Length: 202
Image 1 (tube, rainbow, N blue to C red):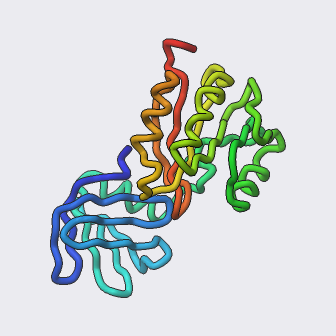
Image 2: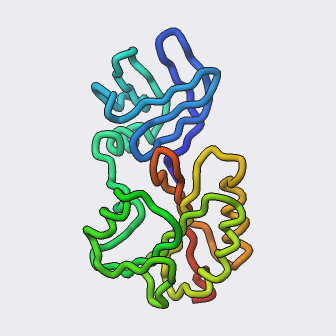
């Protein structure tokens, strides 16, 4: 994915190995200490000798990312919009299942007028399925049957919850014969996992 790396981080007098995650609008670090740095709080971002140096009000955070430092700096300074990350093109045919936040509905509506709710159009380019629990995933077989060609199915689920995990979503998608290809931070509270029909079956 490129947005999740094991690395060494220095912040003030603290230093630790751990995992850094580049989300849609923040960078996270989990090691012997934790950091959560919203892009909006970053005063400067530099990539120097394989180090991503982020100046925030509390001090300087140094992420030793190697070759990825420049790419991460670019993504922080020029983040893609959510719609760009999800690959929704102008005029695309979209099917929606479940409840989505008004901001997302506005973003989709600004790109295309071809939006169907609670029903999968046979020629959908993108299907978005909001799953709030493992039980909701029971709808996947029916949704998967409606997919054709290179259609993308994005399963949007709460992040950091025990009642529905990434493994639950992956298992449900694979059970209906789909291939998982991408993960995107959908919002501060939700993750989106992309499934497609394997090339051999298109």
